[in-house]
Picture 1: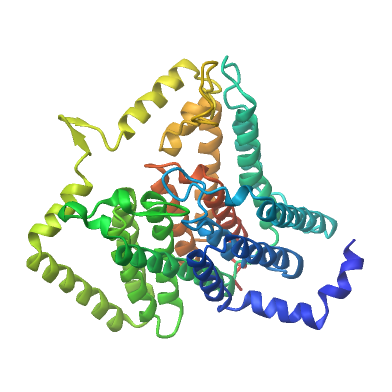
Picture 2: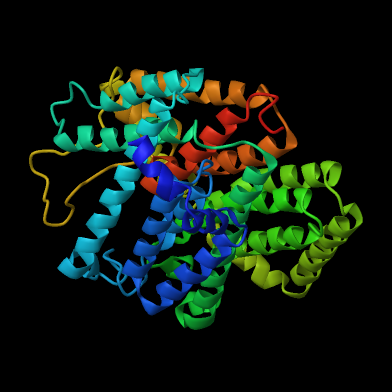
Length: 471
């Protein structure tokens, strides 16, 4: 199989494909394609574009890190018109035969390419075992055991656990020996996040410019901040992950202050997304990135001027529109405390329920799905309860076994990073930290596409743990 594919892989056409996919322009071309298709409601074009790009990356590149571009933009492929979600387009677009057929073909070919890449890696004896891989094996077993012993156990428990195991362990196994951890790879990854962040900024700006209902009642109604692919909470988490990438390019590139300015724009967009957990995350991540940039980066004077100008701008705007600024934050944080009790948009009750589930099913948990015999499937076809906190979710759904499996994986990733804590790896780790912090207030890390991105970033960190990796 390896020999038969050598000739096309070494052809001139393949070399052109490699140059395109490895180019820093690839993420920005992808951004243009995806945003154009979003507003033209050509979702299948986006899917085919991303699918074909992913297949070519897996078949032709030695370093498959550019696949992060495909993973990121998969988050935003669903346009408003074609969204099947309740309250949005409620369309049957993705169930039409002419759409479903190419979708199935693309997904099948993409999965086949992943399997092919894993087989080739093993045939070439490039596959290496490491502690993080074994830790993920333990974690995956814990996921598969979710809900064991619960009388309401259902096939969905196993199905969802298999999907998660394939994303955490299977995808990591494919990627860990097929990515490089040098400066060029870090830059390609960060260009992808910056391009993705720019798309998010554009879509939010268009939403604000075209949807009058956002300003109903004299303040911003965050419930109106909804896209075909998700709501403001998803938006905030995704944009937060892009901030460390902008800072890395500000640190690494000539005229990096341009990316510093982009990071400021990202922060402003994040605030106007009205996502509270993203604001909390940014309050941690942004200052850390700022300190790292000012200590390690170039263009210190230009960067200081940008931060100073931004701070002055905040002070001026707050002074001129004090009442509106106060009302804005009052509205956003209005239901943190209700009737004297901590409420937090119902999260406190979710967390209490997770603890009750843990007490009832301490060993293997309640399971990801707890479908009772009297469930009305006409309204909720797959009733999945999420604790909106990764640790409590593990306790609730997978019990002590799941919590220990996740804790093992988390400890191993910390050890992996501190084996070689370079500035480059630190910015990648901050992208991961952004996802994990947001996931303490939501369930992003257990959503399919963010988990794919997470697995790739962990693979890059593992590959870079050797002090010789970036040379």
